[in-house]
Amino acid sequence: MTESTAQTRKFEAEVAQVLHLVTHSLYSHKEIFLRELISNASDACDKLRFEALANPALTEGDADLHIDIQFDADARTLTLRDNGIGMGRDEVIENIGTIARSGTRRFLESLSGDARKDTQLIGQFGVGFYSAFIVADKVTLITRRAGSPAAEGVRWESDGTGEYTIESIEAPRGTSVILHLKEDESEFLSAWKLRELISKYSDHIAFPIRLPVQQDGKSTDELETVNHAAALWTRPKSELKDEDYQGFYKSLSHDFSDAAAWTHNRVEGSQSYTLLLFLPSKPPFDAMFSGRDERKGLKLYIRRVFIMDASEQLLPAYLRFMRGVVDSDDLPLNVSREILQDNRLVSQIRAACVKRTLDMLEKLANDDKEKFQAFIDSFGNVLKEGIAEDGANRERIAKLLRFASTASEGQARTVSFDDYIARMPVGQDAIYYVSADGYAAAKGSPQIEALRARNVEVLLMFDRIDEWMLGYLSEYAGKKLRNAAKGDIDFDALPGAGDKAAREEAAKAAEPVVAKLKELLGDRVRDVRVSQRLTDSPSCLVLDEYDMASHMQRLMREAGHELPTSKPVLEINPQHALVRRIESETDTARAGEYSLLLFEQAQLLDGAQLDDPSGFVRRVNALLAAV
Image (cartoon, rainbow, N blue to C red; front, top):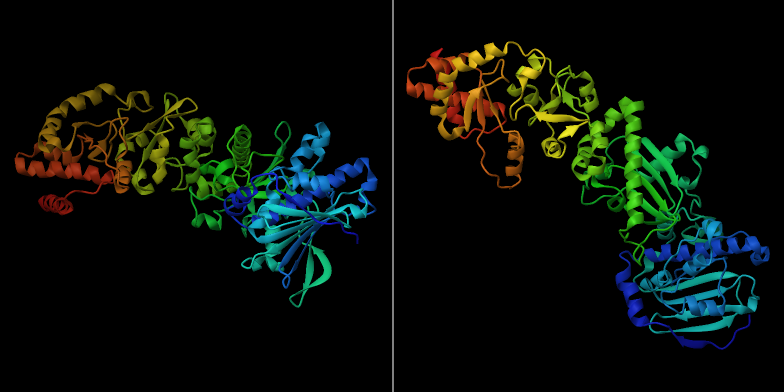
């Protein structure tokens, strides 16, 4: 091997500051250095593959491109070797001797049209190589440009301070990067650790990544490929079977169950990317330990190199249950390739992820009702968040929601808004619902008695999120959503309205007891009136149309929020025996007790906690004793 006198040169930048930034601030995980160096090696192989199309002699009879990683625990070195394009002396000075000069980016800029599409280059920054100094106190690079004589190899070495040495040597084609590891970086001298990092970051690199075969805890001369070297999502859908997708889903999500559904799409154009999104069949295990503020599951790749968990950037919070992969040809990352910059291209991919997910859910709802019902049971409440968060898709999301209703069996959430509208009788122009703390309370709500008597279906809302969600959903498909416990309802417009004149006459006849109750209850209520809502119960509480529902007020107060006190309207059923007892009672004190009992019953039915439970029990006992 021939050698020339080594030459010492200064870096062409404020190297001390830049390298300090790279090694201490640029990367949040020091293990990223391996991803960066493998990406550079992959680029080198891809450049040779591309240039060899026009000049086959560049392969020098060795067209089997690969990346080898070896380590020497005694010498404390880690070596990455590729047989790619390599570099000449001037290229080393230009690309390695100048911080933040990216040869890959310049190569891409030299291509255009289909030629650019054919490359699989990953690196877009000029600092990836210097990530080696995160774990190494000295880095040696040996390289030779394909097609150059063996004697025109180059040896470059630096301790990352302010200088580097460069000399000409005899070298094979390609590039070797030798890291002299720091004392506290011994973990990277482990075959197990290297396999783990390759699997995490570089498993889908297109070229074989090889490690020495381990025998009795020692490295042998035999090499084995440790990456899959093919990304499933890059293969045509026609080549993939359901079991291929399910297997990939399980490896991606660490879920033991099959995915309920998936969507696989390739988008071509000014921004090219691939989406492979999975809908779990049940809440993922890690969902128990993470929420809106810590979302994982959607992995971002750029040209098959894992960059980051990008759920927060590419999926809205209400779709945080999704799992999958986004692989882009190029995306604006920060210089460390660990933070996704917000711009138009990112917004386009985010919108595509949302659209494809909603398309998949709609298809599942139409084609497999059993699977979709399982989705609703597992993730329905999470999806409801989208009503508030995603105004652009509010109608699509609302179409997917399911609720219990007075027309369904039990508390299973099986009724859609479309189902409800299809069953609406002539004359009904609103979707009626009632919200409560639980299913039994909603189903037994006195405010819906008259609606049920007229066979008007009522949606039963009993999840904590429902009332908050409905604050953002005032109508669906042109039909207004009406809370049966709020405001005035035009019962005369509903089927089975009956004799309006008779109701008006009964209300007029009840004016004395209404006036009596107003006087006895005083400022406990805003008003007392005859109810059209009640058929069996003696009383109920009613709020104004835009007041916050009673159980929502309680939830807000429990969360520490101060709310203005609003007094309800007490509606009464003048035909009920308790109301008649109050009307006929001549003893003012006893009438006051009965009136308070009537009000407290309405409060209990509304889910409220009584201010004086013992007083309520005493009044009930007194009433029973008087019977």
